[in-house]
Length: 57
Image 1: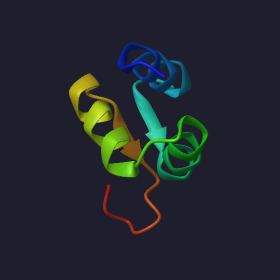
Image 2: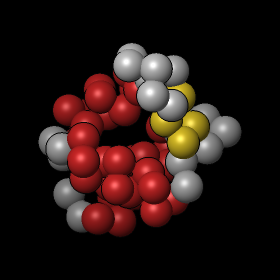
Image 3: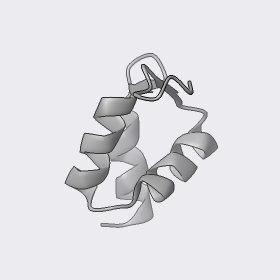
């Protein structure tokens, strides 16, 4: 999967520029990327992670 495909998949999954923590974990698995990679792209796209399992966001 190319970087542009990853970006598109993340943008498609985001609702109102947000992803829940649970959805981010699932999406990383579906896309076969690390959470760190997914998080870095979310940061670049200014997509916020919400409903964090740890209460961090």
